[in-house]
Image 1 (cartoon, rainbow, N blue to C red):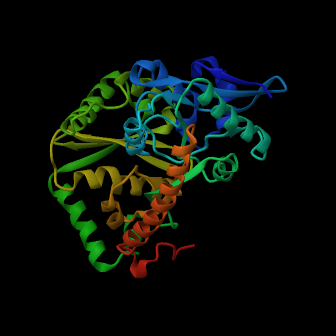
Image 2: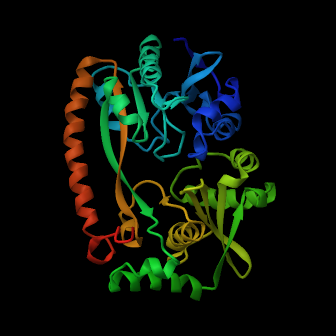
Image 3: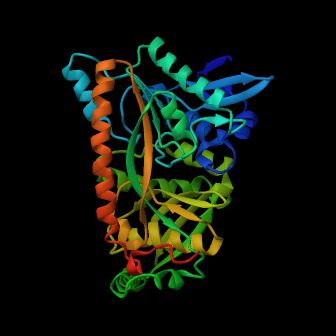
Length: 382
């Protein structure tokens, strides 16, 4: 089987890539990855050099893997800074490394894009080709971040070590409306959510929903300003630039949702989401200042209402944040898979990951005890 290393997603026919990637995850689409690269948000100058793998078969692409050579660990959301420090202390360089991921997008999705989902031979060929590429280019390691459940046994079979983490997701239990959803909460937790929402309403803030077709350069200029202000307050710049947002809005308008908060008919905050037929993905938040409970309302409650109205099954609001628990999100395990070229470090990391997994298991059990659902049961509705 012939595996080719592609220097840009633009070098891969969009129709063939999308046939492999499917429609389940909008950020796996060729349009998304192309917007990231063409805008310069994902480029060698930014520390992301495309090394996408394609596997030929019968005149078309049989399988593919999104892959990047990285010169840092920013924008990955699977933290390996301690590993890089250990390399440096031993006199070795941890960078460059190879990373299979959707840049700046910590959402579980496929990394082994197979024309036939049961094509284990192609899956194995992709993983071993990535390991060979790491060796040939003297990369320290290979990291597969946020693979979906189908990928995990294939990655483990190829010799990669699994790393466990968790996020907080909301699941739709056939709720009729937001009040029906709140009806599954304990009285104390239900009261707290209603207080949050009342603060926003009493402040005179109202909301509008906008999709990709509603958003032109003028609207994105405003939205990007709000997002940038929030990033700058945290001491950084947005990962994606404005050109990316404008491009993705044109290319995948049905997959973009913006919740816009307005006070006295003037925008004061916004949240940007991706959506598929079955899921909503929260990503970027921005505001021009502090408004009591507005972040919770814009990023969580408005998203939950949208999911209930449109029948979406799951809402993934992003990484971290125990505060999501009291808003109805529950801990869900996520995974990554890792291979290190130096055997002594690979062995050490293997032991560390086993310890870390036990910690994650205890953490998930502890935070789940703070579930707002009556009797701690989020799945009474079936």
